[in-house]
Structures are given as C-alpha cells and as structure tokens.
Length: 276
Image: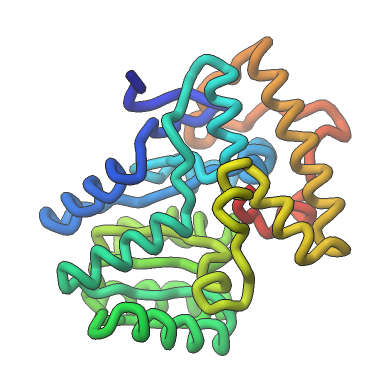
C-alpha cells in the first residue's frame, strides 16, 4: 500500500500511478479547478538544491511526480516507495487523448517555431479535430512573458503544455499558473521535440531498465557525456546522503544547505533537465 505523499530529497512527492494522475486531471477539468503538474528526475533533484527558482516553482505544483526511473528506485531503497515512474511525455500523450475524446482545447508554448509547427501537424494528424486554442514558440523575450500569459488566459484553453527546458518552464508556471485560468498545466520539457520526430525516444525496454538517459547519450555523446556523468554521480551521492541523514522538507524562501564542494553539477551542465 502506497501512501499519498513521500518526503524524498527534501521534496514532498505524490505516490501516484499514471491512471491516478489522469483521473485527477479529469476532475480538474470537470470542476474548472487547477492542477499544476510537476515532474522530478535525477537531474532536477540535483539542481533544485542550488537553484532556488527551480525549487520554489516545484513547490508550487499541485502534483509532483517521479519522471525518472532512478527516482523510483531510490525511493524504494530509502524505504519511502513511489509506485511507478510517471514520465512527463507519457502524461502529455495521455492528456492529448483525453482532450480529443472529451472535446477539450489545448494551448502549446515552447520549442523552436519550426519544431512547434511540425508538432502541430503531427497532433492534428493523430487527433483529428482536436482544438488548439493557443500556440507560441518558446524563444520569446522576458518582456513578452506577461503578454503571453494574458493571451493564454484569454484563449480559454483547458490544458496548457510547455515544451521548454527547466527551470524556464517551472518558473513560468510558478509565476503565472494561478492567473491563467487553465485547469490542467503541465511542463513537458523536450516532449515537443519527440512528438515532432526531431528527437527519438528510447525503446520501451530501455525505459523500463532506467536507461533512457543512456539512449539519449548515444544520440549526442559529445554534448551530453560530461553532463550525465556529473549529474548521475551527484544523484548517487545525494541518495547515499539521504540514507544516512534524510533531508528535511524544503520550505518556501528557505535556503538549502550546500552540498560538499565538487559534488554538484552546475546550472550549465544540467541546463536541459531531460528524462533520466
């Protein structure tokens, strides 16, 4: 029997399966109440300890879920088990099915203009008649953020998906999520690239083995090898530390204790916090 929430690495995570998450989103749509979805993988767990903007925005989430298989394994090792990995891209796909079936509208924010256009084409092909109420690429200036938020609110969309890297998407949702009047909000990271066919997702066997990060590394070894080495090493160190001295829950506005020198990946190294 899984508890509703588990305190892991200083964050309260929701011990939910995919079907539970979709049911919660369905309820939010029916009642027009907000559910802000957040996902955690190993890279984010490493980064949030030194990035207060990312940490604060994740604490704003109504549901915080395990996006990485390594997080699920760590939770069981630590005696605070999460039932399964609930990957951001899988939530994205399930919610698109839900929107199509129930005649709900969606808003899309993120990716390069050409990638976004291709993803829209794929979505229309896979889900004929699905209403896209709003769409904007992710390469906008900071001064445009308020207007984009206003346009999303005016669109009347039922769901908002953000295809941007962390912590940009978490910060946008944390800053504007409450004012958008969109019931379901989900930052999906690199899922736009995958949906558009720009990036290949790992085969299911690799996903189940917790090796999705390795599959991505094989696609971009020069760019990613050092980032993954540092991030994965830091996550193992954090897990060992959590076994000995479990972290207290982070609170809004409270600075975290620094990790020992050299044990954390820098913001540049984990700028694109993809599925692990």
